[in-house]
Image (tube, rainbow, N blue to C red; front, side):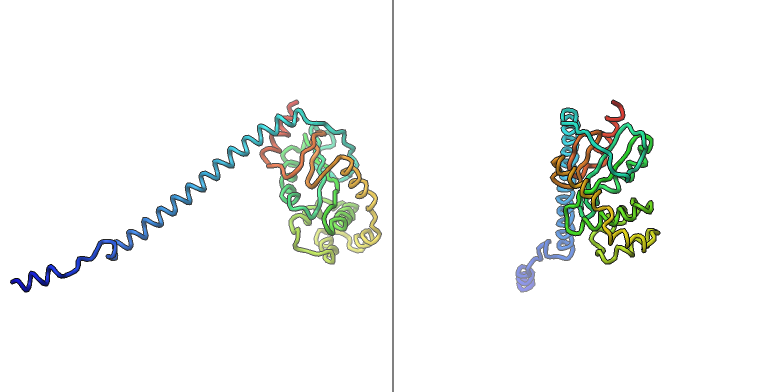
Length: 237
């Protein structure tokens, strides 16, 4: 009897966290804790972003009312919207500019949403490598009535093609490639682009995109919601 008791008392008791269910419980609780931490960071980031955007929107709209208003000449034939606008948006852009790429879909949506109230004019400010060639190519497509198709093509595939592929892109949008190539070789619209560039410098434009909305100068990639608020405000004036 003493021998049996001795054997029982000397047998080690397995701790719970070493048992299979204990190990599983620890792993499960660790995963849950990690998920809660990640969710907390995500919610914090969303709240911070919302607060930041609300502050930016309110601050920006108040500054817009007190900012300098520029007199703009509508030199470019390439525009979207209506010929009799309540709001005129002039964009100085570069086809190699990543922020301009972010903006071009917004411009398309706005031109449809406010097709009876807004006119959107594109002007060139080629400041990146090869941007002048792309500006010339877009205008050569434009003389065949295909400017905006080439405009969208350049931004959609930005960085995924080279200048040797310009005739292929022209062909894809339905241009007469021979006429397109002749126009490009002659640099037919160089003077027009140089005028845009000169105007941009006179307007003290530092980068792209830069916008003039009813003469108010705004730089950078404008959030879509803020774009809408500005347009609605100006339409209502």
